Image 1 (cartoon, helix red, strand yellow):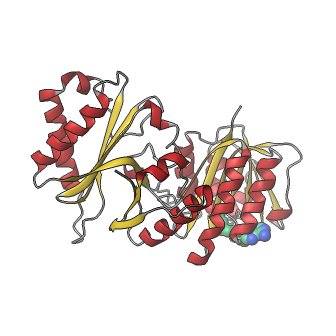
Image 2 (cartoon, helix red, strand yellow):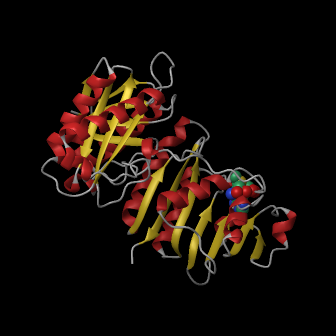
Image 3 (cartoon, rainbow, N blue to C red):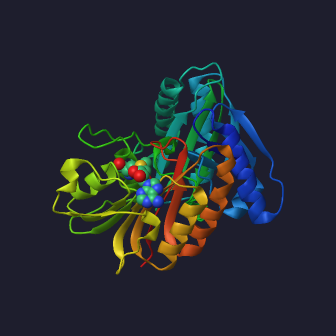
Length: 353
Ligand SMILES: C[S@@+](CC[C@H](N)C(=O)[O-])C[C@H]1O[C@@H](n2cnc3c(N)ncnc32)[C@H](O)[C@@H]1O
C-alpha cells in the first residue's frame, strides 16, 4: 500500500521534495517517494501513517491506498465496491465517497471517466451492498464532516488508479493532509468589484477553515494594499485596521469601518487581541514565519490567514519552520497551497478554546 498525494501538474517535484524534508525531519529516515504520473506522488505507507504528515503542496491525500488496474468502467466499479465494503461493512457510521481524476498521461482530462466510475460504483453498491449504500451521505460531492468515514477513488489513467478508505481510527491522524473537498480543490471565487483577484485566497481560506469573518469582528490586515482582503472583511461588516506602505483603493480609504496605518506591517502589534490576523505581505518566508511565531505565541488573534510567498523553489525549505511554529502554537491550523495560490502557500487557523 502507498499514501498517494495529488497536486497541480508541474508541482510533483516540489511536492516530492517537501515530503522528503517533512518526513526526514520527523523520523530521521529516507522515505520511499515516487512521482507516479501528472499531479500524483506516492509514498510507501508505513512512514506517512506514523507521522501525521503536513505537506502544503499536496491538494489531496489518499492514505493507505490500494493500487487498481481496471480496463473498463464496470471493472473499476467492481473493484472499488469490493475495497470499500471490505473496510466499511463493519463500520456503522455515515461515510462519503469522492471520485476524481488527475490529468491522464496522454493529457486527456479524466473528469468524465471519473463521473462514469462514480455512477457505476453507486449502481453496484445498490445491487450488492444496500445497507452500506444507505449509510452513505447523499451529499457526496460536498465537503465531508469529521464524523464520517472517507472513501476516495482516484483515476491516474483510464485503467490505473487508487482506492483509499479512512475510518474513524484514521481521521485524526490524517486531518492535516486529507481535504474534505473533492480532490482538495475549491473553485476560486470571482468578484469583479474587488480591488484585486487576491480576495479569492481569503474566501478560500475561510471555506477551508469553516469560519467566515463576521459582522462586528475586528481584523488586522497586514500588507493590505490595494485592499481586496480589507474589502472582503468590510463587506462582511467587520472593523479593519489595515497596514501598508501604500494606501488602499480610494473608496476603501473613506470607509467608516477602516483604520489605515501607513508604515511597516512588521512593526505593528494590536493593544488587545483581535478576531482575525490577515497577512498577504510580500516578504521572505523567514520573516513571515517570525511574524506568525509572535502573533500566535502572544495569542494576538483568534483566527488567522497568512500567505507565505516563494521567490523560487529554494525558498520551499523555509516552510518546515512555519510547520514547526504552527504545530507548537496550540491553534487548530491548516497549511496548503490553495487552489487560488500561485507561487505561495497559506497558513490559516483558529484558537482552540
Ligand atoms: C500582495 S500585496 C497584498 C494584496 C492584498 N492582500 C489585497 O488583497 O489587495 C502585498 C502588499 O504588501 C505590502 N508590503 C510589503 N512589505 C511591507 C511592509 N514591510 N510593511 C507594509 N506593507 C508591506 C506591499 O506594499 C503590498 O501592497
